[in-house]
Amino acid sequence: MKIAIIGAGFAGLASAKVLSQFGHEVTVFEKTPDVGGVWSATRRYPGLRTQNNKGTYCYTDFPMPASYPEWPSGEQVQQYLEDYARHFDLNGSIRLNTEVLSAEPKGDEGWRLRLRDVNTGGTMEHEADSLVVANGIFSKPFIPPYEGREAFEAAGGRLCATSDFHDVEEARGKHVLVVGYGKSSCDVAAAVGEVAMSTKVIARELLWKMPRKILNVLNYKYLMLTRMGEGLFPYIEQRGFERFLHGPGKGVRDGMIKSLQSVATRQLKLDKLGLVPEGTFDRIARSTVSLATDTLYRQVEQGRSEVARDCEIVRLGQEGGRPVADLSDGRRVPADIVICGTGFQQVVPFFSDALQQRLTDDEGNFMLYRQIHPLEVPNLFFCGYNSSFYSPLSAEVAALWIAAYLMGDIRLPALEERRAHVRKRLRWMQERTEGKHARGTNIIPFSMHNIDEMLNEMGLNVSAATRFKQWLLPSNAKDYRSVTRGLLKRQRMRSKSAERPAPDLRGRPAA
Image (cartoon, rainbow, N blue to C red):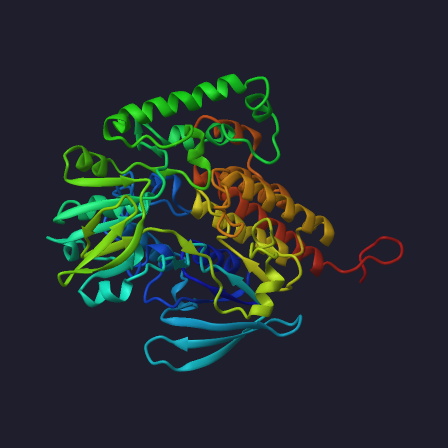
């Protein structure tokens, strides 16, 4: 098949590599000048590092370099993806600086894409048999519509998203407000806090944070990046030991959560700093799990930075010709730069409104079976729409699921059964995340559950012994190399079977 792929981040590159391996002709369209998606130089902010250690944030057959630190920088991750594309000879299939303006189905016969060359502005068309959407669930940063923005900017103030703030030197000697308390906000605040005149984190709600090393010794991966870590939180369908943890063994589970809360509070000095979040520690998995930015807490302790908790910006403006911000706690503070880590809007701007309605429910949530396959739109797949601790592995397994589907190796349930399955999952997501499920694409912290479900449907999951090991140790991507080999072997067997002459009526091969 001719397959068009939109996006050249982890999911787009995994799709290109996997589908090429299975004999498809792929073309990847990426509007930025480099591969990387959220790791692109066009989106990297100062202080950006992975949330995972390098051993759990890579593809199955391409480990990160041994020279990389435990938590690689944004620049190193982007370089890793460039190396991946080069190693698997994908560059000839990738068209950078190419924006997809529209993608429309040609009935049941494929897709027609209208493209724009970002450099020249010229437009062109491209046709494909199938389309893979890999533009990412963090595709468009959300900036609150603050009142007074025009006057604020007229006075020289700058309002931007974290992904649009690239040079820490822009903050030198300035008054900076960072909006939000997620990982990106805290990372940026820590970076600018080293050079800014003042740094304030405006946190409408405090979140529980996980230290990278518990008690400064135990890597958090042994707690949160294991099947045991996932098992501490109730999944929609519980089996085996999980039933014990949320049934007769709930006291054990609650004790473990309480211990983590106590350690995090003490280690990060949250009591002393007045930064203990509301609720219990298990809310850390409400919609994501955020690692603590240790530098920021040290800056707050030293009085060099401030976290304004339970606080919002209510208005931007100017005073005496200088940009300022009015806060909900009654203060008016100087604000030369306001950097927003206030989340993303998941958009597919290249689809028409009519097509988007076929893909989503009445609330705008994506109706995707296995986070991949639309219920009623043929020849269309989504990859990377399963926000995961193991983003590279999750994307690669989703790409393998697509390859298996295209070779007729997956038997889907009936349409109404799939529809009921997706609706049930969306209701559960809505309740579990308090509405913060990224239009139905957020599966954290249940990364391994999602991977298991895809692999089980393919009949290619790793061994029970490997899965048992993963209860205590982080999942190693290389353990899943066998999946690609198994599916390729299956494809070769199918090809040989198709080439074999049909038997005659007596059961012997025809002459």
